[in-house]
Amino acid sequence: VAGLYTHGHFDHVGGKFPGSSEGPVQGALELQDLPLYLGVRDIEAAELQTQLAASKWHPLKEGDKVQLLGDDVQIWVIDTPGHTLGGVTFWVEGHFHEACGEGLMFTGDTLFLKNVGRTDLPGGDPTTLQRSLARLSGAVDGAQILPGHSYDSPPKRADLATV
Image 1 (tube, rainbow, N blue to C red):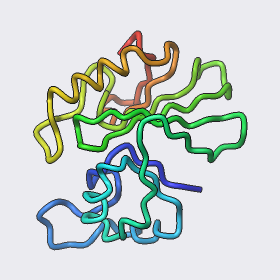
Image 2: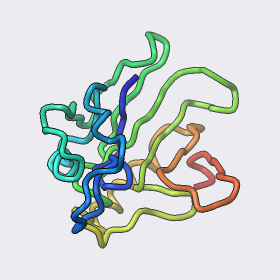
Image 3: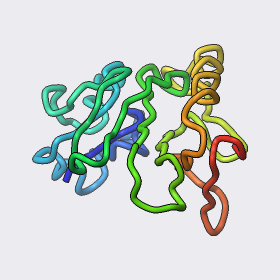
Image 4: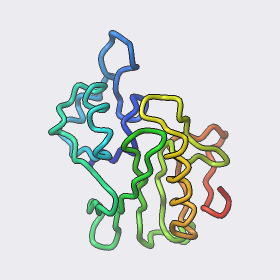
């Protein structure tokens, strides 16, 4: 068991709401015994919000491979900053089910279904986000997109051609 985080905003890492005097979300500190993975440029933000030391986070960068699911499934890291400084997308490559096509892409708040992440929050930059979206548009055809939020009920999924 491990924690794979696409970016360091409080609503993803279990941290406290910025400006709040309250601590992290109850249970967030219990994660300290798990391996926690996050884009290298978001570790400082996650550290501040969760009160977990930077040394608890495994820094990730473009091209890293996280091996958590056995030899037949690879988790590749794609740098996708723009919503945050250190945003990453996880491409889970493997053949687990025909509905998964060429794998799964966990895009966090970089790419939603028919929308993109905000750039007006700390670490956001519209030009950088556009570059990240351009990179994703040329990524693996047939991979299923799983964003960090789904505002549809029930949640939907799509491949890159649909998004």
